[in-house]
Amino acid sequence: MFDLIVKGGTLPDGRVADIGISGDRIAAVGQLDGAEAGQVLDATGDLVSPPFVDPHFHMDATLSYGIPRINQSGTLLEGIELWGELKAIATIDEMKSRALAYCDWAVSMGLLAIRTHVDTCDPDLKGVQALLDVRETVRPYLDLQLVAFPQDGFYRDPNAHAQTLRALDMGVDVLGGIPHFERTMADGRASVQELCRIAAERGLPIDLHCDETDDPNSRHIETLAAEVIRHGLQGRATGSHLTSMHSMDNYYVSKLLPLIAEAQVNALPNPLINIVIQGRHDTFPKRRGLTRVKELRAAGVTVGWGQDCVLDPWYPLGTADMLDVAFMGLHVAQMTHPDDMRACFDMVTIENARIMGLEDYGLTVGSMASLVVLDAAHPVEALRLRADRLAVISKGRLVAQAPRRQVRLDLPARPKNVIRRHPMR
Image (cartoon, rainbow, N blue to C red; front, side, top):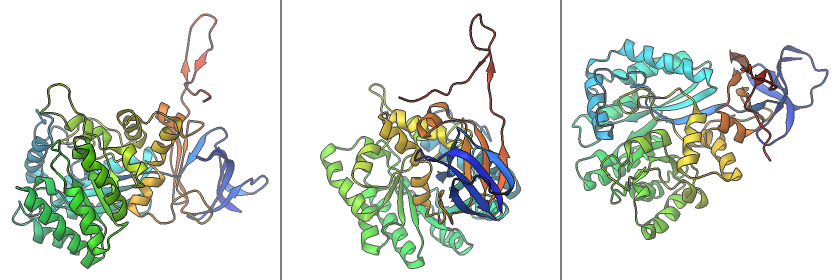
């Protein structure tokens, strides 16, 4: 007997199957006609997917939009300045409250794993304290990884080195950095070298905000790839944003892509934020700054999509919906071939799970019983509709449900209800 059966759903690969859940694990995938269960969830005709995953977020700042003021220029640099004002007045309890509220949003959207960068330049490490508590609170239903992130620069801020190590000692999971925000290119390069050394010494993954700028001469991803190879960090390193690659010389990029692939450095663009923040100094033509997603994928690099920000000093919108992220990404990256659109769905599920190093992720027997039922027939339709989450199961437990939505019409000789699902040819 199963605790729960998800009946008749369509898996992302097109198979129609029942999923039997016992405890917090998937115990069976196939035709389970006649099997008994404590609860049966009918997913006939609906897409059943592993949960959404976000490997790049800033939870210490989320849901703070307008405090203490609004980013007037919309730039990255004013956002960092504004964050400095906010973190000076934020309390640990207030950060925890905002973060937990965002986690509620995430669960409702089937987003069950998040990697969040947390500022380590605050002398009291308030954000670290807050999010360590939040990580434990949400552990039963949401996997939260913390990145020690010296927001004001590992060398630019005189206390960042010691504070970042202190955050790691407190139990933060991943080492971060922001080399393009150091005072000079040389300092940025040195920060990448030292951060990779520390990550190797401590056996930690490393995830750097890398070249989040329109400057084509910002080439810290090159240093990151070289240092990853030097220290044996292959498969444990991520370069987030990489927006300078949008403006780089094509010949240089032709040399850079094989280096990134050789180093097995993951690439993590954040399309909602990258296209809003980048190009602010341009008139026309105006750049949008998203990195070279298709080219990176073609080179064999693991590429995901990140949310980055929701209602904070850098971004005034957002709903914790990774389908919004992928939808924007496929437009800006011009990934509209059916195979590319399907890949964009993978980039907010299995590819992001790979970047976070999640174990037991997926819809196979023995995997963690975490999944989402979507009001769509297949992954591309889920993207087109930004499909409603009809049910969310986390670690074997049904944690969110929503009714199927239909719009009633009153039109002559037309149907009384309309839905936007449509067969794909």
